[in-house]
Image 1 (cartoon, rainbow, N blue to C red):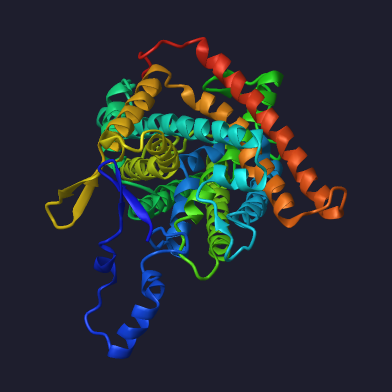
Image 2 (tube, rainbow, N blue to C red):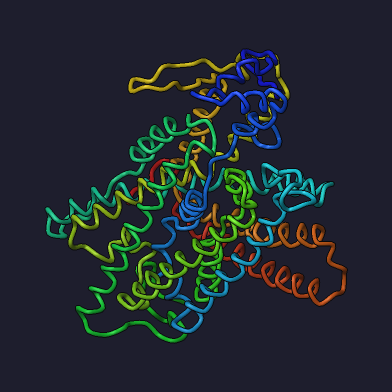
Length: 505
């Protein structure tokens, strides 16, 4: 029987019968189980001795949608405004295909050796270690977890902006648009941080499925509101705004007149915004590890990936294109918080509330792999420490038991506090997160999946398949570099008006 760590000691599973009891069994069945205890053991545990996974196509799909459709969908109108009616939708579709293709390559690398009975790789890093090994494992880990840390900060900022938008829309409504309704974001970031401290105590990825489903529903809610308001705006003035080549040099925007150099920076940032809107490969293996088998995990994940990316691409196209059609070159950075729309204010409040709820769930979906990595490392480092490994059963008011781990409580709380403070200190950190995302997109979404697949399938160097994969690899590398340059330009502009803890909207 596999062992477990409890109160700092390794304890055999003598209570295994508790999981295996049945009410009535024929005598022949009891004798059969006595001769083959593994038959009944396998009902509760997987082939590796861990508890049976319960994830399905639907839970995997909800995890992916929660990870892919972020509040960034509302900035796609701005991105398409920089690229125009030709390049904008085309870039969206191209990156959808790239992400779908490389994600399918990555799903096949979940098991080492045989795709059905091979050894499972529980995390992205373990998959890289099994297929590539060497220095690439550490490089992957640094890039992956630094990105997850950056995403947590970015989501804190985005949630506070949506919370302020609710207050500001009501303020605008009461004053008839006369009051600028400026306010500080600090209190809203702290409120979001408090919520994340509570939800971060969810033990692991397999327990966060319900929050992920709620978040996915919220994604469709605010995306649909943005789409509906865009359609209404187009119907109101009876035409589609925008141009084939995107925003023109000399256009006067809220940030000033667009120069030739700014046109280039805006185009690069738009490429980055679209490319990273699809990037969820960073947690794909962790999502796949929640899926039960049979059927083989990679088959379920391929279906979930296809459905999720198809759905999100349709939403992206509708929201981005209708937002651009409604506002043209003056499309705001965020349809629902940039105050492109003012009425109906109650509908904007509902949409922004949906964004906040979604970000609460998305924060957990992205941070759970980072939480698990740190906790596993500490458990291996200090296996006899009660503080690190002991779990205490806490009865819940409405039934059930919560297993409290003191290290999990303390370290996850500290993590949330750090991300919240950094978000308050540098509220323009979205540009920095864009840079981190740029650095993470190529290696995590393209390079490692391609290289692992080549190693896994033993594809010969110089073959047509190898050349095709390397062309995708190189092309995405240049896009990443371009997007990173655009993000750096954004940071430089923000620093000119930067005041720590003083930003207001």
